[in-house]
Length: 624
Image 1 (tube, rainbow, N blue to C red):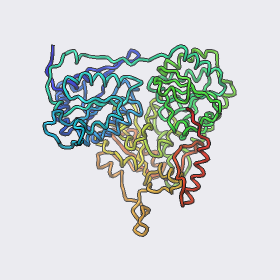
Image 2: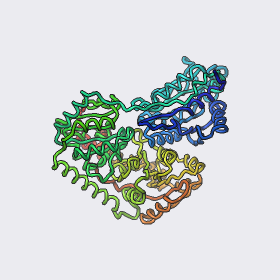
Image 3: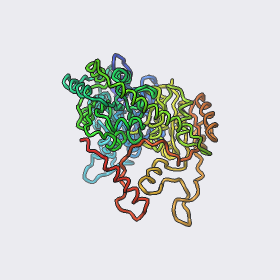
Image 4: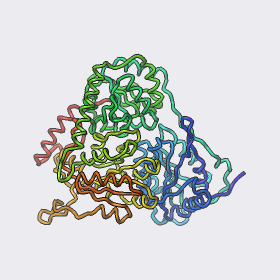
């Protein structure tokens, strides 16, 4: 038996019938579709989604977006909140609409988060070539701008004939629900093919459940890992994003409590333990706590759980200084488990942590090591407390702004950030109280993610307040999804920190001897010809108001706290605008990040920076 539908209608009908299952819990795979329509998808996917909304609006709801990159960010944040068991779809027109999604695709793939992208494509029949927005290649007539999705997608297919659609859809679903392979899945569908009708077997549209497995590690790998850990005296756990995605936070907590092994967290792993847990050492690496980094320097065994060991985590491979350090890496992906010549334990993080704990029955670190790690954590927490209450003025320091938001927010609330100086300060200073309370995109550290990500988080869980921490630089990159929040009455709290420039790169520029060049928002001085004139009269609060957002302007730290409390109770999107002093640094992590410094220069500042750089380089280790 068959049913006659267009390719676009068939795709929508198929996707609405897909479900996921993990640990016995079944959920609809897709929470909806973000879309911006143009000539490449309006008559195909646009018509199909309109028809779907008229007949079954709750099965696959359409959400209007304002920027194609931003809608992918919303989708990625949504998937992260669901620990990759639910996801969203994004559709665009051909040409610039499609290529706008490429940054979002890269972000999703780098962060191992699932999103389905359906960009329109040029005519498969080539009957009207070259169509509007078509890239013509003189020797490859089948090439389009959508081919740029290939390197940033975990799955890519182009449906040039209706018969190809089922294989493309099944291929995408396999990738999206695979904890190892997941990332952006892209199916490019030419605009004429989208509107073409076909006789489809009704079986294609039956309810289908994709089971997300929890693979166990082999017995021999577990035994070797247990032996290495038992031989250690100063072990340290590095908890990555895989702890969250596998729902391993409770298992990790039990492991830490029974063995006494301290836990340090990456950006994606932050929240693996509550900040005040006795075994919680806070963040590790270049933006880490002094507690975690002190333990990392002397650790004899590093137990990596669901981490890919980015350069920030390893402080560009300078943080693990014990010459005899060994690594035990627990990861569902062998690619990550093999890093640093580790003992690989390939499997689901929750299952493997539980199995290793069984093998460690009766074993624990020494009481002195427990006491040492706990004392270091308390010292760092005291440092955080001082940073929260510096008494700096007249403009507050960024650490004081973070402290105020942390104090006003509730334990289950979510803080969101992605780029600038804020992510590093949040990693160090944010006191996470709930496993989902910290949402910083740092795999791609994409400016503009913050507001879109905050909307996606709130769409995934409306029971939590969402605090979007964003600087003026990142706000100017991508603020237009505030209109989406207004349209859908989505309650997100935007904390806009105005410091008149790129504060993060400004500090880095100073570190590498470039005197914050190109990082201030200033007029061009006619006498010098340089961008070092007066401050620009940009009013971002007024900009947000013009988009329909309720804005609260704070004057000083005490007023800022009052405005935060008012914003928490507001219905719909709200912004709290505050000016900050960009020249007050957060407490030092006592760790490094490798950013090369000019080998030769006529400037003294650059020459001094090069000497400092070489001193740090001498500490780098290969960690094959």
